Amino acid sequence: MQSTYPSKKVYPCPSNKGYPILQKAKDNNINIRIDKLFNYIINRECEISEEFKTNKDIEEFYEIIERLEFNYTKESIRILNNENLEKLKIIIYCIKEIFKSNKKKLLLRATRESLINVYDNCKEFEYSYKDTEKEINNFLDYYYASVIKKLEI
Image (cartoon, rainbow, N blue to C red; front, side):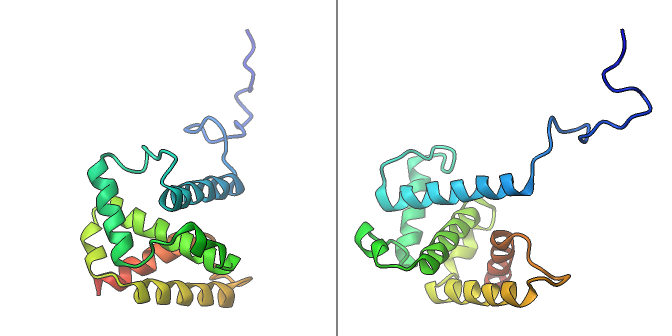
């Protein structure tokens, strides 16, 4: 029996993965998760069992969102422009990521103003680094790391 890939040929994908995942597919996946979390918070209708383990976690997360004044209603969301809506989604997703990590206590130091200021600063850096060797490839990761750094000070 002859092998599909002769020994002198390299397999087109890394051997520890079944198939390669393009960066665009990864970005789409995270965008879907961000939208799903945001819609759950605003509508409180769909399930996000993979995001939170217990109802206590969900309630604790809502308390944090309310304390930071990111608990928008459907009506208030309608008046936001696309840029501010995207900002809100990223900030809420970042809060969720911190909440789920072992850095949950850092959220006690967080304020609405500090999270928005860090976002705005990160966006400025993203624009200034565009098309340079310092270009930011994943804004969410960059923002998350910046928020953690800010809260640890």
